[in-house]
Image 1: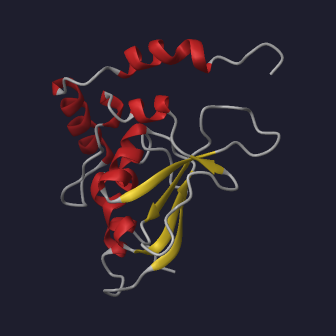
Image 2: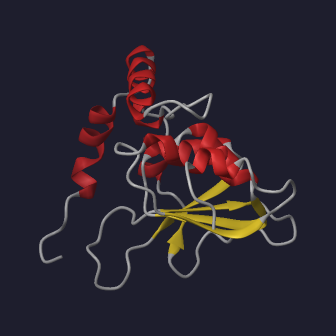
Length: 173
């Protein structure tokens, strides 16, 4: 077990050290952007062995887009039995393994829907950035907000309005 700032401790791992599974359960990106930055997620992805997986409750577009840019294949986690039906319960990200590609469907996951894919093309997908690995949460948020304001991509609110008729719970569910 390593104690301290995960951004620093991750750099202390031996070169070539690889893992099969990372369970990412940090506080939300809005609360703790340091652990959801493009740079930190890329460093985590680099620690995955071929076929290794990162699982997280997060379905945030910024997180998913960063994981995809880090070279991982994405799938949407399905709600557990008895759990409220939402469009996704989280994200499964896998480092490609040439010998056994990630199945589109599996026990608990499915491909990202068209709605989820489009979410990755909105301003919500602008990454949390921490180039030095030492920025405060406030600095990371301010940088992202400036990038979002300058970005010509579709606003997240526009995307939500477009998809709202398809995401509302149906009567009796």
